[in-house]
Length: 302
Image (cartoon, rainbow, N blue to C red; front, side, top):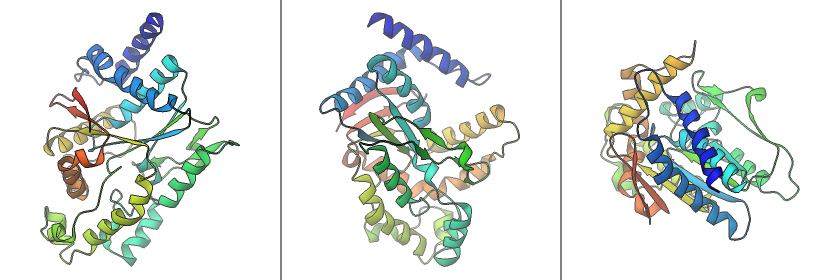
């Protein structure tokens, strides 16, 4: 086991080295492995080993909280330490196509042309994928990929291929596990988009109804939910902007957002994100508290 941990540490440090951008080193790498990644892997293993049936885990948290990095690291730790196969995909990969969202924006409300909020995901596709991944007679499952630089679904040759039945499935996404609000809470606009572009509340109410009905059914399929809690909403903007800056440095010819575009974009997520930050104990089984330096300072079971 000691040898295995050394191998995990070596691979983990190599992985993080590739993720670092010039002038922005990742701090406390070893501490994160010891106090966060290994205990989280142990907990996930304990869930699976009870009956050895495929478990679906939700991983939620505001934009830029680090969900994708966490799942990439968990994938190789669970494989090397426990021999478990982890299938990971984002709810973002199941966004409706650009064409579908434009149609929705004309039929229901113009704001639905912007991806992100409940209603802009293909839930039927997600439910069908869950069912295929848990079937006894397993066949290769194709999971879509969404290209954010194109704001559309990628071509099928770029989709993820799952050739073996997974032991654990992680569905990650900013709104995974979110609950609907009381209609009275929707009345007061919380930003310029709501005030100026949704003054009749139609967009807010439609999004809320999706959460209350179709998304509730989907999230009820999760065996457990892990929630990453950021210090406050200002860090959603700060860390989301950092993502765009990294993308600009590491991806050639890919369209990225400016500071003002990021600020505008997160307004679409603001209401639900803030509500989740406030009511995290009601939605999550395990909360991971992140500090201002993006480190996990503690974990708490709810």
